[in-house]
Length: 254
Ligand code: GLN
Image (cartoon, rainbow, N blue to C red; front, side):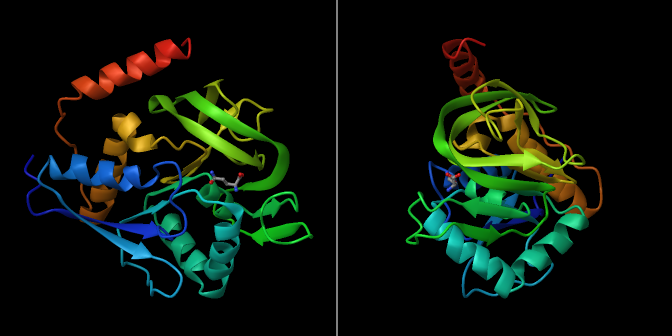
């Protein structure tokens, strides 16, 4: 299929404040794999002080960050109503990927501990957008290391580093089951959350370069919704990606 005249607009949510452990690599991977199919890509930064209206972008990406950035971002999501507008788009099926700190802020709330570097002696509850039926509470241990999960998108691999523990509400659908690592909370063996075409998870790494099948799913889904037809991308030569994935899985004993 010729995708020459198609284009993809990615809304990078708070990319200047939330972009830890290579998260920007996700938008680079989307760009790279779309360009390889002749699809144009524009990345629009949506942050504090910038305007956003429904229909501005075709998909969203939201990375992770420290608690301090999360405080400012949580306030802006609520005050500027960006959170409400993003939710409206997700309800219509617009795809979104959120990692770690971004994932936490799209749940109901993140209860940050006073032990974190938040510049306060009080526990702070950061209001979320309630897009994912999940809530997060600060734990006292850091869940850090390589992570692998089994999911609808085959095995997904990444790197996690968080102390927040996320719990899904009974209606919450996990992204997958943990094979190695901690996942949402280190207790129930679940990782991430899927709501419509929105995916939240703890997998930095970056996630999409390490999992090209998921990257292509985002491109296909986004274009299919935008152009209102079923878009199928031609396969790329993923020799290096396939070998890197096999090597990673062997190293962590899977
Ligand atoms: N501050 C959050 C936590 O530790 C998010 C960290 C991150 O995005 N890596 O849980």
